[in-house]
Amino acid sequence: MKTLPPGLTEIIVVDNGSTDDTAAIAEAAGAKVVHEPVRGYGAACLRGVGSLGRDTDIVVFLDGDFSDHAEEMPLLVEPILRGEADLVIGSRLTGRAEPGALMPVARFGNWLSTGLIRIFWGISFTDLGPFRAIRFDALRALDMRDRDFGWTVEMQAKAAARGLRCMEIPVSYRRRIGRSKISGTLLGSMKAGFKILYVLFREAFSTGLLKHQKG
Image 1 (cartoon, rainbow, N blue to C red):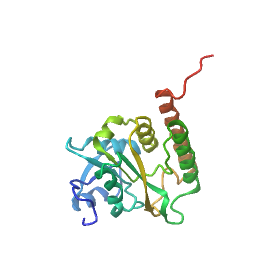
Image 2: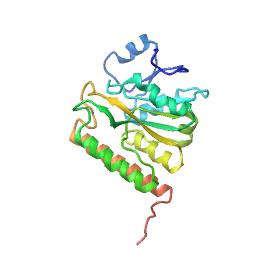
Image 3: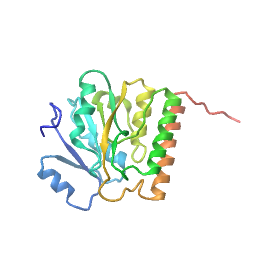
């Protein structure tokens, strides 16, 4: 715990239908475990956010597959504590990614998605990395809705559209435990890619950057 930032008051683990002893181990280690029966990355994140108290200042998201380095959390939190950022993304592309940790399809998806964010809103990202920190009041104002693959890009697109102060910090990344349901299969990659593009264009239309042309 000594490597975590001062002021950390709660660790929340969302059990999104796990079939192993994750929940029991997390509880034994002192984490608060909440359950979300509806599968989906965004659904799990929304459930975790919904369990937070109103006095929360900063929320940090990271995956539970051992790919993110939790000890690097201070790197993401400190710019917010200094008043320099509202949202800090941990970039695996500019950090130290273990060989094989980021598949080519994920690298291409990040390149395309962050390129569209830059074109639409003028904010430069390199990654849609899951390891991120955001002010809780800013997160609530974003009115996050996505319940699956579009969660990360929805947050970045809405943050860019609403003028939040966004920053990237290089982070380390290792190969996950187990196979990803997204990048680990062709079908999963296609579904995730379609959803990410859908969310980006939906946000662009909703903020007036793109207009539907009637025939």
